[in-house]
Image 1 (cartoon, helix red, strand yellow):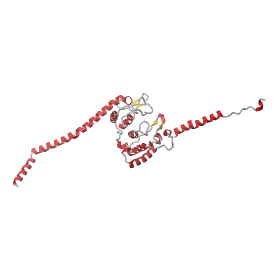
Image 2 (cartoon, helix red, strand yellow; image 1 turned 90 degrees about the horizontal axis):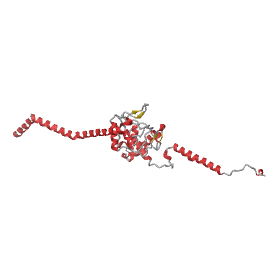
Image 3 (cartoon, helix red, strand yellow; image 1 turned 30 degrees about the vertical axis):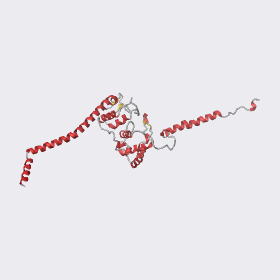
Image 4 (cartoon, helix red, strand yellow; image 1 turned 90 degrees about the vertical axis):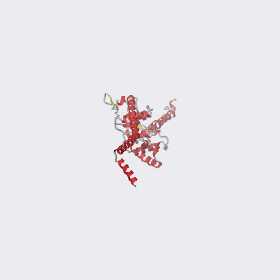
Length: 291
C-alpha cells in the first residue's frame, strides 16, 4: 500500500509540474492543427473554385454581354434615353440560367421580345455567367431539382399537386399562355410562348424572375410548393387526348374564328358563286317576238 501511495504521489506531483502543463498545451495545439488541416483545405478550395468561376464568367460576359448590358452589368442607355440593355445587378443567377439556357440570350439585336433559339453556351459556361451576374448584387439563385421536378413526388402527392396546380394555372396563367399552355399573342409585339414540353427548371425560373413582359411570381406570391404544382399540372397536358377532335393549335377562339371565316363562310360564298354560274338562264325574249 505504501508503494502504491508513493507512486500515486509521484504521478500527482508530475501532473502539477510545469512540464505536464506544456505537454497538455502541445497536445491541444496538435489536435487543433490537425482538425483545421482536415477541414480548412476543403473550404479554401471551394472558395477558390467559386472565385475562378466568377472570373471565367466575367470574361464570357465582357465578350458576349457587355455591349448591351455594360462592362459591369449596369445597363446601357441609347442617346434618346431608351433602355438598350437592362441592368443585371440584381437579377440573380436564376435569370441568367433561364435566359441563356433557353437560347434567348444573347440577342442578335434588341427587339420587343427575345425568342427562344439554339443555345450558344455550354452548361459550364452558363454556370460561370450565372455565378458572375450573381456576384453583382442580390437576386434568386438557380433552384434545386427538389423545388421543381415533379418526379420527386410520390403517386399520391403527384395527383394532389396536379389538382392544385391546375387551379393556380387557370387563375394566373391562362390569360396569356392559353388554357392548354400553348401560348398566344400579346400587346406591343409580344408573344406568350408555348410552355408545354419545356424543362421544369426553366418554368420555375420564369415564374421566379418574370422574363420579358411576364409578371414576377416571387415565393411570397406563389410559394415553391405551388410553383411545383403548376409544373406538375403542365406535365399532364401532353398526356391528355383531344376529345373535341382537331385542336387547331389549341389557341381558342382566334384560330377557330379564322377557320370559320376562311373555310366556313369562304366555302359558302364559293359554293353560291358556283351555283350561280351553273344554273340555266332563261331568255327574256318572247316566242312571238321573232315573228
